[in-house]
Amino acid sequence: MGFEGDDFFNCVLLVRSTFSPRKVLEKIGLIEKSLGREINHSAKYVSRTIDIDILFVDDLIKEIKSLTIPHPHIQNRKFVLLPLAELNSQLIHPKLGKSIVMLLSETSDNSTIIKQSKWLKNPGKDYFLSSFNYIAIEGNIGAGKTSLATLLANDLNAKLILERFKDNPFLPKFYKNQQRYAFPLEMSFLADRYQQLLEDITQFDLFKDSVVADYDVFKSLIFAKVTLQEEEFSLYKKLFNLMHKELPKPDVYVYLYQNTDRLLENIKKRGRIYEQGIEATYLQKISDGYFEFVKSRHNDNIKIIDISDLDFMENRQDYLTILSKIIS
Image (cartoon, rainbow, N blue to C red; front, side):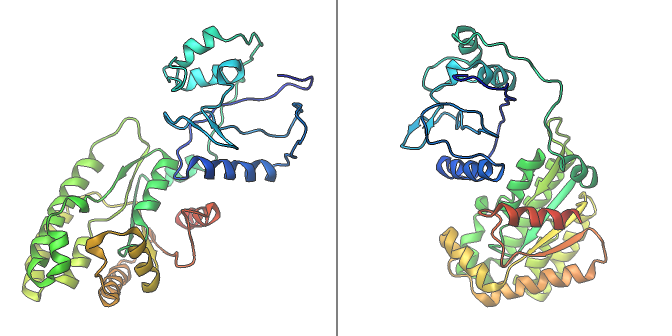
């Protein structure tokens, strides 16, 4: 459109991202460059190897020097509107206040659009999901369990199960007085984890392919051994063993290891007030507890991944490295 040249292949994708729109634009530029796109400094349209545009970001309306959201030419391009209508026909243009179907019916673009017979797909997805239906991500406090579980669930169309620690009234009290609140804290966590995993994993979700959780129920026993007195732990263990028998077991158990200094940095960075008093000795005891558990299990489905020098949230290659180690 706008110049003479060969036909294009066009598609519209729905993407979930943890990055800001400006960061997404930066990543897009790197992708285009890696695929051989050359920057055209003239005002004229020319053929290019690839051209990736941001159409919408939720309902955001934003205009800065390098980026306008929504894309200003959506309503004028049938090759955008037609695949977008197939993706979500009822999507409302936040600036124009009209649905995509309505914009498609009103557009002045009379180009002929031919639908291709092939579907795009994630080449690694089928292999990965055929191996694992239930993935548990584990690690010490501040290791990055929730972040990795969220990324995996989005990439694999999996049901995401996140630990509900924020709702536990004993947690802030425990960090102020561990000896007094250790037992009620561990008991409440055990009851909540048991109920959540039993309901969320055994309940079939028609629209999800698998389950990814940011914890495994066995963490209850690991933390309880560190925090409880001997008599309390003995009682706790009996109850845990009764509950553990009824819960589904993960197909793969991923343990994210980070050294203590890195854990303390992460805890400080995320800024939860009640966690700021956590000491290195406590983290080390938790880490030792996890390794004792891992050594007592001679299963091929346990993956220990050292991520002390990785940043999978900012570096896509680090994330792919972790993914390959889970699969291997």
